[in-house]
Image (cartoon, rainbow, N blue to C red; front, side, top):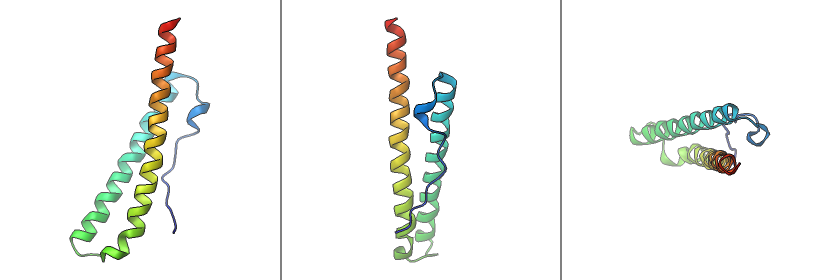
Length: 91
């Protein structure tokens, strides 16, 4: 099965300053929004009878796979920002 991946921001772990990390989070949010739009388009095609449900399974799986990866990246980025905030309050 062929998977489609939306473009990811540069390696999240490599960025060390807060504005860059916030830009990474923003980019991930945009990628998630695109994935949701893809799901909406596939659902509309199925609901309108434009495609057989069976022909949409690859698109649905690709959207799921990509959204799953993006939500893991987003969680890691947000957790990293929270950890940095906790560390800065300790100093």
